[in-house]
Length: 139
Ligand SMILES: [Zn+2]
Image (cartoon, rainbow, N blue to C red):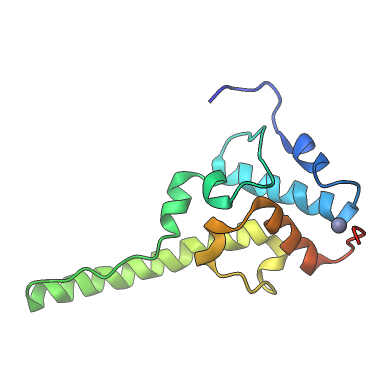
């Protein structure tokens, strides 16, 4: 990846959301959230891209629901069961944290499930935030 001199690519990204104040506000917030998760400037985020392609790989892999391992004996099964509880708790914590980072104030009212986040588009995320924050002048 080439390094850019400007600190953030929010301005060209926000410009793709027209003149609606609500859409521009939420687009800026989504861009900030994506940059915070990526821990680097994202100068060329495509609103049509799906979140699974935009989010850092380590976050996308966290969104895959953990599978339960099978164990050959009872002691090992108990040990794996304890690990599964910890793993599931970590999964829930991380995915909820990601969901609330992306959806912001809309996270509480939104019906979006964490499992579906990787297939949602960046524009869809902005629209979802606008739907719950109001003030849209697009239509
Ligand atoms: Zn709008």
